[in-house]
Image (cartoon, rainbow, N blue to C red):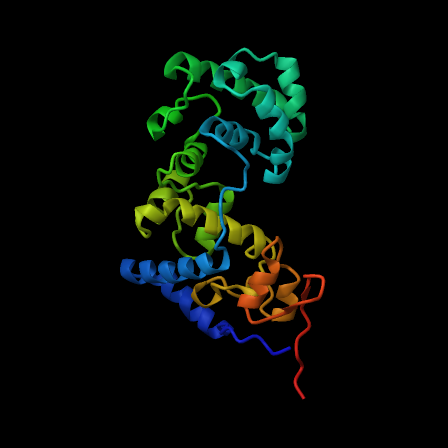
Length: 279
């Protein structure tokens, strides 16, 4: 196997980039850097999508409410039975609380979530004739739906571009030097100003995918990161490809390591991560 062919910055280059950003990167310079990073992420995650399973806007609203403090995988295990039992807003509005709580118990905080789902169903029936609205202003007035959830629904169920800023998204864009802001709404506007509106929903997916698979909070896989050359935080995690490769998670692992020029598929589809030491 050959050594990685993708160019990684050295620590000095990364430090210069970080210093330039801290000193006040120009808006044009930042937009260009963000654009390069997003193009690389689009190649890394060509199939990025909302990882919650749904077939209509109401189902996505319900799944997103359940996803609070819960993994998407666990939510997807719960929702098939839930969606069969409660196919419409009126069904949540008239739900037996004990039965609903038992169905959603595996997602955690099931009592609060049941309250939100029953309230959501009642509000949608009373205010919108049983159909989930498709505007930000109307969505955020519904029980259990804040701005983040509303943007998830708009972007993925209605095709209306929106940037989903949760804790992880904010952490990543600050780490990458896209913004220094903490307030989610201000982060949303700051990132939105750097990216064409048509791309807002996919930006959310690509950032979140990369955070879950490569750019972990405590120990990012810097040495095999596809956006390392434009990242001021390069070196936060291992920069040695062999050490970084074992940190990559998710079904795209083989693809991500191949993009890094590191690793080849074994016969069973797993990745070999041995590095060629040379002659």
